[in-house]
Length: 164
Image 1 (cartoon, one colour):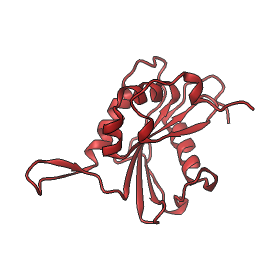
Image 2 (cartoon, helix red, strand yellow):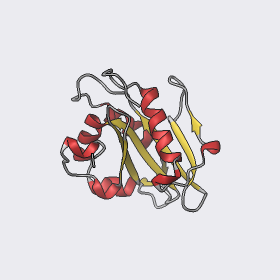
Image 3 (tube, one colour):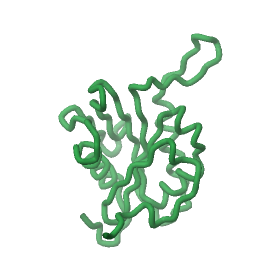
Image 4 (cartoon, one colour):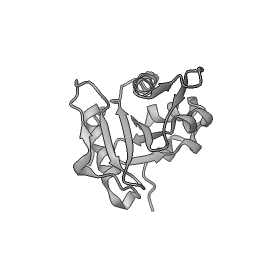
């Protein structure tokens, strides 16, 4: 699926990430029939999945469109939106984030923004937040980046499908 040289819309990125996560060949067990997808200007997370390894996991994904200037920090805005959906516990009096292991959070971003986010978000923060990045290239190829892959720079070629 190509985009004919246009910048990628949020709707396109949402559709590619949804297709990636519900495709069983990618190792996921996310149920398409239980997936909620927000409309463009609707409140809430863009994608809400149910399933996973224990069939009771949740995956919340916030997606952002591609901008002509890759220097835009829209990934930071998306991260902020996800953080506001995480619960905060004052049980021990120290207001720490509680992200149950049954919840995963993701950012669906164009590859240029994904490269910046992966470099700028520390690995420790990604692990604590159970945060993933889904990079989408110009041809619609999606690559999942796990928390252990955060905190370092990658060549932009790592974000596109490798030719055999």
